[in-house]
Image 1 (spheres, each protein chain N blue to C red):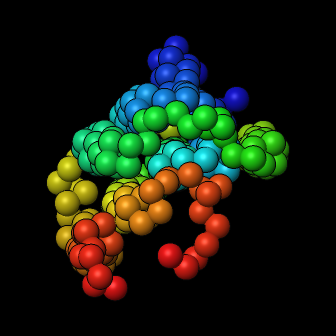
Image 2: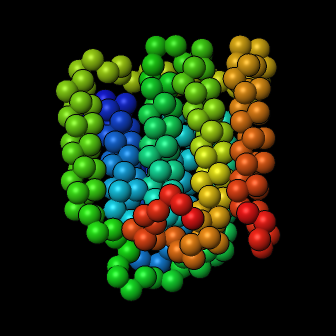
Length: 103
Length: 166
């Protein structure tokens, strides 16, 4: 197996772990943790393809990963702000208990 | 593959598994930090030093701290009585296993056409800075705008609303 394939397998495994966490946990913060794991697995793919791709000096994959890290940071800040706001309103972070759009 | 790859892979996957499986939410956040550190080591092993250190600064330095703050502010560390997993956890597990099966099958099918070992690219921070300031200056400005908007948005969303002000 080539090194690139091993990195892709690890990234796929991490993505699936994050997806399982996002789909099965009750706590909204744990769902956000799962989403962060999925984003990180995608970043690992980007960096691995950049490293073993034909033109690493063009820096395309590296730039994509850096911008992806920045966007993921913004997503985490807004998501956790929303969780805190919902907790203040409904006094729970249990996603199974949140079944109304109206406050 | 080198022994370092397997060690880092085991660390990262164990951290990720612990982050989604542990009962105590604070422990989950700490396990998430381990997974982030493993990914940063992967980036360093892939000769992407800048991305590796950006990963450490942004994820371990900022996102993990933010997650811990959110857990403490919402008292999420208390384990709920009726379990930490959702009612339809089996469906979620099946979907995740299916996604992994498809991704793993796709990777294993394309092993023969994937590029082989190449010489390590020599990328300096100077080159990255030049690329960011020249070719990628417009995305950089858009990301700056996005981060400003996210900062203001997060503060407004989480701001304490006054009694009777709605």
